[in-house]
Length: 140
Image (cartoon, rainbow, N blue to C red; front, side, top):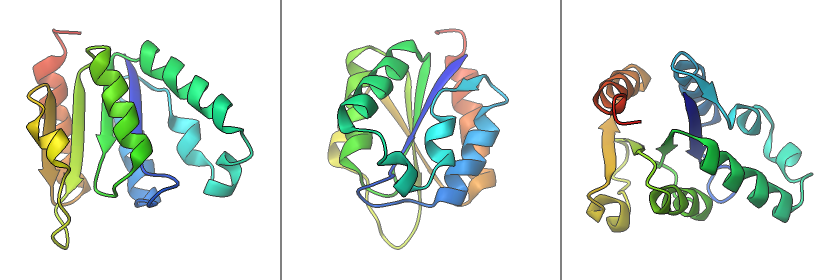
């Protein structure tokens, strides 16, 4: 399975350690296409020009079987990636950590084709990922 993992990098950097652990967990299900993107610091990622980043990421979304996004930290880029995957009818899971009253976008909440799971900690997130992948694995 080809997995596209999305999380805020530039706009509102999320929890990079959590992203790393989520990617490691997702690796048991297949190839995480974006793994290297999250191995680099923001300074490393900006060495690429924006057009190259866009082309690379759009190609990865075309290739992936599923998109999983961590949406706790708001990000225009993550929203863009989700919308593109949605346009391509890719199964989408959004993970949102319950913390400090941060809310999820109404656009995501209102879309009946996007699954959103709120989680307390990473173990909870992993359990929710397992549940979702078991529900959709025969559809992809």
